Length: 118
Length: 111
Image 1 (cartoon, each protein chain N blue to C red):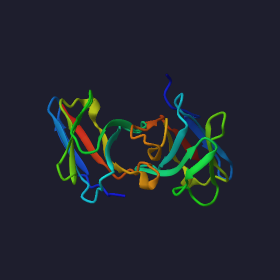
Image 2: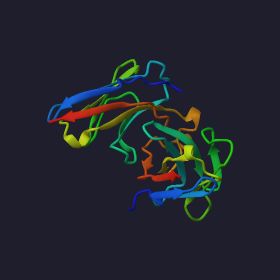
Image 3: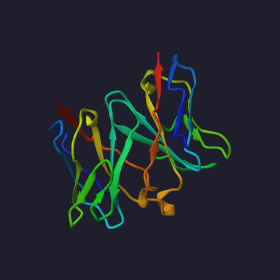
Image 4: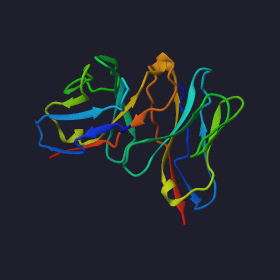
C-alpha cells in the first residue's frame, strides 16, 4: 500500500505564475489535510477536505489560494500569482475518516512539495 | 483547543532513554494526546497517541499523568537517527480534528 504521494517534489515558479501541488492520499483514505512550512518555521494548518467537500479552511489565506479534492483524482492545492513569500514546503496528510466520524488514529503525511518562487 | 508547552531543545546520549515532557494543563476529557516527529525537512512521522492510559508501541512509550495535564514521550534507546523535532499535540473533534503543531522540542542525540 503506497503512502501519501505528493508531486511535484520540487517546483520553481516566477512571481506572478501559478503553482499547482498534487496530493494522492493513501488507498481508501477520503480525508486530506494540507499544511505549509515556511523556512525555519513550524507546520501551519491550511485546509481540511473530504471528497468533494471543504470541511475546514480556517488556515487558508483569503486570496490566491484554493484547494479541492474531487471525487476522482488527487487533491490539488492551487496558488495563483505566486509571490516570494509563498516559498515553502507544502505537506499533505490523509486519513480514512475524520475525527468527528470516530477515527482517532494517525494522519499519514507525504514527503512534501517544495515551492521556490524566484 | 488545549495548548501544549514543550522545552525548546534537549540533548540525549546515544543508547540512553530520551524523555520528552509536554504540558497540556487545559486538556479536556475527550482530547487525545498525539506525538509526531519531523526529521530534518521530511514529512511528519506519527509516533504514538493516547487518551488516558499509558501506551507503548515499537517506537516509543507514552506516559500520561493521572490528571492528564502532562505527558512524557519515552524513546527507550535513542539513536542518532532519532535526532528530530518532536511535537506534542492535543487533538479534539471540536476543531474538526485537525492537528495543530506547536514549536516542538528539538532533540539532539549525541554519540
